[in-house]
Each structure stands twice: as C-alpha cells, then as structure tokens.
Image (cartoon, rainbow, N blue to C red):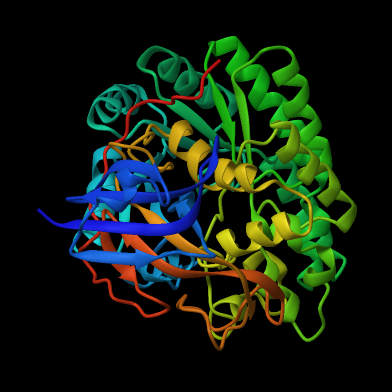
Length: 466
C-alpha cells in the first residue's frame, strides 16, 4: 500500500476552501483533515508533499481536445503522448477527446481507431466523445451500445458541409435517440451552409487574408444555429451541450433557454476570453495562427462570456485544443483563408489563464475550479471520481503556486506546435506538482510521468441535468 500526505495547503474545490492535509492511499483520496489537528498529525506516509503557501486543487478536466485529428489535408500536431504530457504541465489530469466516425463507416470503426491511437501513449487519464458524421439506422443502434460502454456523448456539426455536417433531420434523429439512451448531444452550432456562401463571395472579391475567416463566420450565424439546435433538442426532449460558444448573441440564446428551464448547456474556451479579431488581423499571415471555428470575435463579446460564466449560463471552459504548426500547416491557407486548418493550441494554458481571471476579478477561486474541474466531470459522467478532492476520488491533484509569475511562450511550453497563441502574456500562478491517481507526473516543475500511465476511463451519463 502506497501512501502520500499533502500538508499545509489551501484545499480548493467547487464548494469549499479549507486549510487541510490530504491523505492518499493506492491512488485515491482517503481522508482530509484540518492542518495541525491531531488527526492530520497522526498520518504517516512514504511520500510527504509540503504545500504550505500553495493551493491544493483537483486536476483539471479538459472535456474538449483533438489530438491527432485529421483536418484540411493534415493532422493536429499533438499526439496523445505529447498532448497529454503538455496537459499535465498545465495542471490538467483528464482529457475527453473526440473519436471520429467517417462518412460510410460505423461508429465502432472510429472508436476503435482512436482507442488504438491513445492506447499506451497517454501521461494522464482519458475518455472519448464520439463525433457522429453519418446518421442512419445502424448509427442510431450503435449509439445505444456506446452509451452502455461508457461513451455517453455524441458531437454533431451544423458546420463543415461535406465533412462532418449533419442536416436538421439527422440532428433530430440523433437527439431523439439520446433522449432514450441517456446520451448527451454536443453541438458545433454555426450555419455552415450560409457560411459557405459567404466564403465563396469573399474569395471572389479577393478577400483572402486570415481576418476574413472571422468576418464570414458571422456571430448571427452562430446565434441562429444555437437557437435552431435548442429548438430541435426541445422537440426531441433531449439535453443539449453547445461547444465553443464565442458570440454574445449565442450566449443570449442559451440564457433564454435556461430561463425556460431547459437542459441546455454552454462551453466557452480561453481563446474567446483572452483573444479577439485583433489577433486574426495580425499582418504577414500571422493572423492564421488564430484561425479556429467558431472564430475569434471582436473584444466587446468578451464581457458577455465572462458574465455567462459568472451567472452559470455558461458552465464549462474547455480548450478545443487542436494545434497546427504555423510552418507547413497554417501556411496551407496562404492566398485562401478557407484552406487554413482550423484550430488553436491551448491544453497547457487553460488552468493558468483561468487563474489569471481570478487574479483579475472575473471569477472566484471556487468558480475557477467549478468550470475547469468539477462541472466538466459532472457534465460528462466522471464525477466524483474526477473533478474534486474528497474521500473516494482519484488522487488527481495539483499543487498550485498562486504567486509565481510566468510569461507564456513557445520557448517554454510543451505542446508540439511552433507558436504560442498567448506569446508574451504575463500571468500570475503556476503549476508546481501534479499527481495522477496518486503518481507524480510533474514534480516541482519536472516531468516525472510516462506515456502509458494514463488509462482509458469509461463514463456514466450526464450528472448535471435539471
């Protein structure tokens, strides 16, 4: 039996803050006790971690990553090995990645392919959502089987016609099935049919630079698709989770639905909270580094996103980590913004950026943990195994120095990509030590983990429904 004690830190969960010691046995939390009390003082262990002056927080749960995703004739540049190592450096101890069903193939084939990519490669624990690209009777039956196996969420796209796109009828059928089997439909809500018209028109006018990616993917078309997805889910009697919400008009649609008592949820990402169309407009094709979908918005949208996070109209911050190198990948779109691979690196930056939001007064400490750890775990059936520090939970724990200062840079990050979306940004707070199921993955700013430590984690259904 291996035992670890974490002493003297401020333990922060979504519901509580207390100066407490944490006792870990065989990869799980077995007890917490107020620091300095006889109970805590009586604990002995092979490993003692001094957390005095530090935060002791649950490992982050990033419910939206794309390792090795094929897109636009290339692949996301992080493998499951490099991407999960970078996640650990950033204080994230669980990712939920997306297995992809290709048109004409089964869900099972897609899931098997992603299991093969991840198996034995991950430094932290992982699970899968399933991208449903081809809705038919066989697919619908497979959805039932996957839910029973612990793949309990299914992503559909109102964008990307000819690639991932589902029409309203396909979306409705999948939603009806999820209403029966307990699955959760995740929606990329943009009107892809209308966007393709605007892309064609922009290119015909000679508008080819990266900034036009943001101009054609209009906020109103995100709002319209969000509204339509909500109404389809309402018809189906199914819950809905809208991914990477970027526009204030889309937040308003979610807020209205939630005010009506619907099981409708929203996720946003750090890039929408900290970056803007100013980045897309950077000269010399530098703007291509910031091409993602939904796109970055003008800065005035950020206030609505922060407000949504405070009011719980937005529940989760994930990264949509989907990195493509500037050299050789983003450059595929020189002369045609529609050919720039869509995606940003961020799995390593999320916890630090959200702590900076605490420093800046946008969020409380407990809300930081709620949107980055506890709620994603609850939303996707991982709680209380993940997302909290409590007896019985996996000992996925981060010792976080709230006073350390750092400058984000490609020179110091661990993601396998040749630029940082936050180059030069100064933040306060830094990960010091990370435990995954009680095993040190990061030890005082050194990587001590290994590929293959992370295990596949089946999930129960959504634990966040009204």
